[in-house]
Length: 286
Image (tube, rainbow, N blue to C red; front, side, top):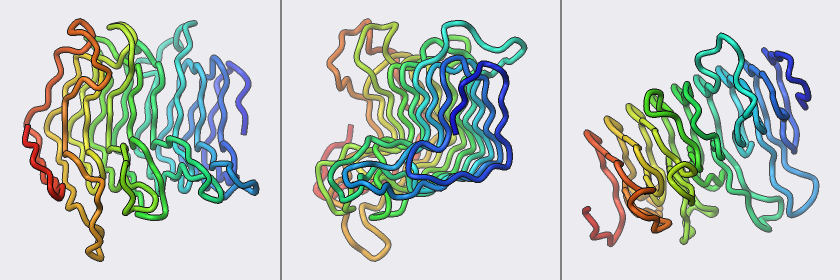
């Protein structure tokens, strides 16, 4: 379904299924997606991946709430309209109360993959009123392939209204197959390479639970003024049948992945966080 208008559109109580993107919204969209169900189907061509539940480009308002979707490559929120928001709307971007199952970036025939996420904000900059909350994401080992369940790439709130990521439950982030190595996925990561106005900034993430997320649960890999607090991060390093997962690394970390200067990577904190994370042979406790 393609939304090619700037007039208000509401998709309510819809059921969509397909191998490509299920909902596509173009520039200036004012879109609400509520109480819908989406099912990603396997593409008919080898070397092609499953589509997004919602693929948005330069929206003005986007509310995605109370939906259920499975076997898709998730939500892609790409940039934001510079023409301003919708009058009278205090929260232009909401992703809340959704249920997602098996975010799947695998290509048909296992001939490559897409860096799929439950939700990625790509270059959504300096936008107040952003909330990602009360979502439930469950990924099953060997039936999914997610990179970062929540990825904030070069995206930012404001000092007075940070991006709020809270009260989400995320289970599972695995390579394919789950016993593979070299996996870089996480429960949540802040990302982006640029100057201080271009990287992820002004983020507050709290009261989330990340369970069985290989590589890491919550990373601050880039950005400034990012505050993680009061979260629970638990990974046993094994599947339920006792199979060991070799790609676990750390529960949480603050690291300057892009090696940016101190006026770009600064003022980042992790506080009051419960971490129970098993990494076989790991010796880092920092």
